[in-house]
Length: 316
Image (cartoon, rainbow, N blue to C red; front, top):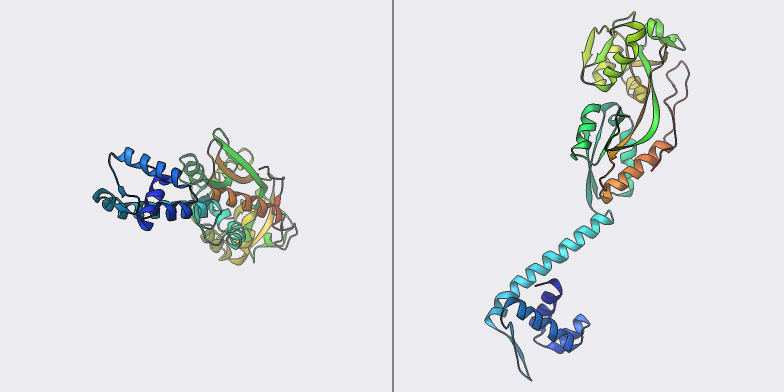
């Protein structure tokens, strides 16, 4: 039994006329009769009683009629639902992003996406970089945003820009008036860090170990906002990716270019290389790439307007 047969049966059963049903379906009477006959053979018995003057339903036809209505309604609803998903009139997509990106850059991209596709739901997983990779690899999300992974096996990485770490200091600190801060100067102060397994913490420890030894931490927190508030209240200093500059300034801290060493990492989008994206995920990926190209980048001076990123041209 197939959809074409059910539509033919329903049309005849409602009109009780092969001629009227054929007109409604744009089928000739011989073609319609053949379709009904094929359905009856598939099911094993007559559904309609035909004479030269009338058409009526057999008991089995009467039993099939409400079921056919329901089945065809479900089929039509399923077709329409999928059509709306493919045309992005409906849909859902999940994305995982590390907190520094999720809290500072992602909202702007999601606003652009929402303006274009208002009926597509987006679920954002604000998780540390390691979990971003894990969620993408285990297909818990279609898209992930974070630092470029050391190994891209099974993953496609699309770079957005190269982010440089900056110093975060209290507004009243003597360091706040300097055009540039070195790691040697920064580490003379109490240091406030994100807790492990934050990728930001791990990158800092890895890159400064050779010149400055093990990172001595006075305070630590899971949340960037808490780190920023601690710095603003004079508890110490920190270092964060430059995409967090706006957030740190809103919390009352100052951001200064940081060097010796200068720590930078590429940030971009990750997806499974052998997995075809849903229409909604494909659309979101395109918006994220577009947003990474058009978002203004802050230029570097000592007043907190820093060079946010060096942008490559993302490849789709």
